[in-house]
Image (cartoon, rainbow, N blue to C red; front, side):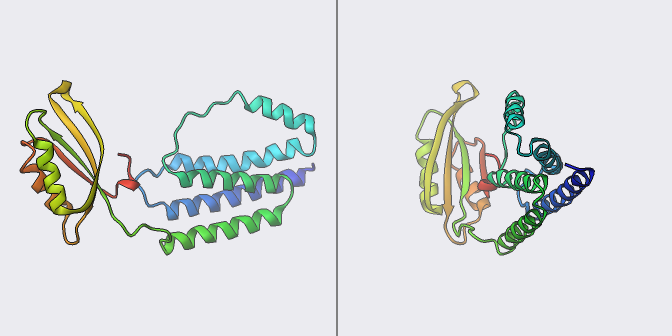
Length: 214
């Protein structure tokens, strides 16, 4: 490869990765946004481009690179599944620029970014059912859990028991439900109704739990 190839690969992979990062920031709706993740996307795109230049069509270099990278261990858990898609996108763009398919890299970046923006703007594939997570602590003695479930039957269309565990050294039982509220019932209404029957213990109602870490 020539010096011009290096300049084009680094500059184009930088531009395309920055565009992808801006689209990621513009379409991110949850609470887990990470500036370092977006910066990492840019670094990955440029790095993959350089790697493809180094490897070229040399099989021996490719196997040597696999061996070198196999010692790297990534232990950070991704907050959202869409993050994986953005990582693969910048890797694909980096590969395209590194192998001198500049038109392909530009077309891929433009097309997929437009698709991401359109799906985000139109809120495609959104679920029409809004569910809440209800976390209730009750004393182990008495039928407090039954009283809580009576409230859920009255205030919700449906609910499911997710987990039951002891807390505070066994002095309390914590139950976790997913709940679909009836039309017109507010989370605060449900909170107040459960607080009245759970022995004065802690009650938590989380809305939009699919977008947060429960």
